[in-house]
Image 1 (spheres, one colour):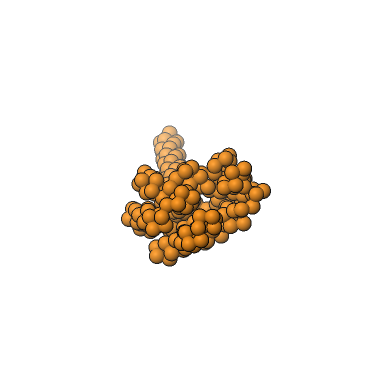
Image 2 (tube, rainbow, N blue to C red; image 1 turned 120 degrees about the vertical axis):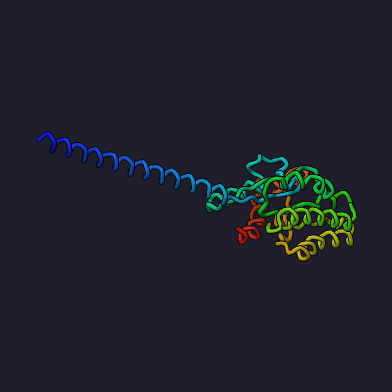
Length: 226
């Protein structure tokens, strides 16, 4: 009788150990699965670099009102795996951007939105010089991240800068976009430039309402790439 009880106890102990091992394996598998899922999510996140002037930086606005931040809001609402990097700098010229781009390229760039040239135009920098600088920036991005999608934000100058200069400046952006297989935003300030109520007192930088329109102008071109 005692022997039978001992045998039953041994069998029961074996069953309990087996269940315990099974539970531990299940927990381990669940943990490994969770780690894989987190890692996968991190790897899936891609960067969109907005590289430009005060228009991109959101001069005179709260950072959350600048058009790159509004683009991030749209991305988040659609639960798309992209992170916006605002590389805008007030007063930035194409030459300044050429000197700054390498630092920004230290982080992975999957999509570049290039918004430079307006300060060159306002200073009367020769279009040929601005073109050369912008091409240099594009070349560096391509060399570092050959699979990156590139978007060019077009700008325009007022006739007061001279008819020929204004025309050459305007044409520079679509020409560069075509040459480099870039998507083109025809005119970043479309439906905003020259409209007093949508611009700050300086008549150059958009208000918060104006930046909402800029975000829409950009989104039309950017969305198909996401």
